[in-house]
Image 1 (cartoon, helix red, strand yellow):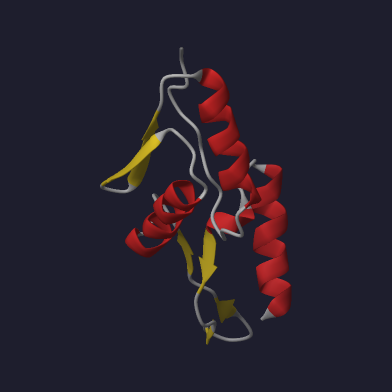
Image 2: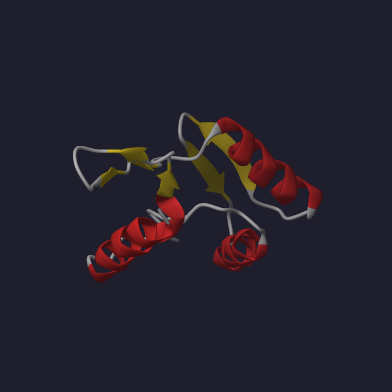
Length: 106
């Protein structure tokens, strides 16, 4: 089972997929000498994780405002430096998801 996971991780890493987004389910016996492994690719931020991030932003007394919009978190602020500080703080959190930052502008 572990070998199958390592094989999948190796191939997806070569393709540029972040392995934090993978969720391995229980492997099952396939036909003959094979094993079948189901892997879920997580997309978006789940509500619990989003609430944890928003709470951390508000708890850090940073100026930007954070709002949960579906599977995304929208962080808006007036100054670029405040937004960059918020991004650095979020990266420092122990979140088991790869995060993406979009539409960053002045």
